[in-house]
Length: 123
Image 1: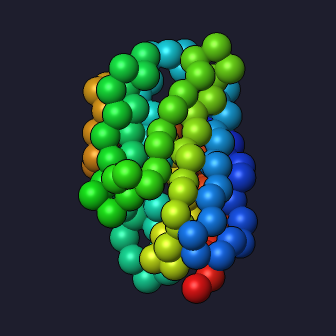
Image 2: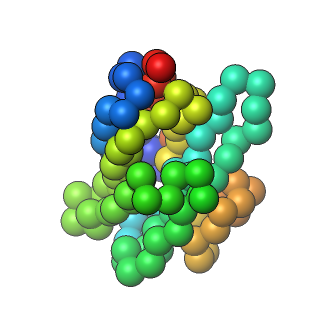
Image 3: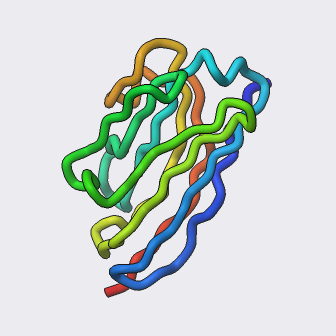
């Protein structure tokens, strides 16, 4: 049974940093590209960042480029999202997801999803 479990969310002020982590189990982690997505109330789930299965390449949404960094540790089966200079518009539930194929910005490309962790940024 595949499980993706996010952690690290919370309530912070604008300009602060947070580090999200996602622990994977039940899959050959190094075979999967990983992604972070987010969903704010009343909005569709949107792409945040993705990383290839061996970590050699990353991609970011324009809205987070230069502020967020995705990384992974295949030995520990974890993927992380370092979020700096947070803004109120970053407030959302953040999800990690696993994709057996190449990295993708499209949610429909991902095979497995975590339950999400809430990030709230106050102004």
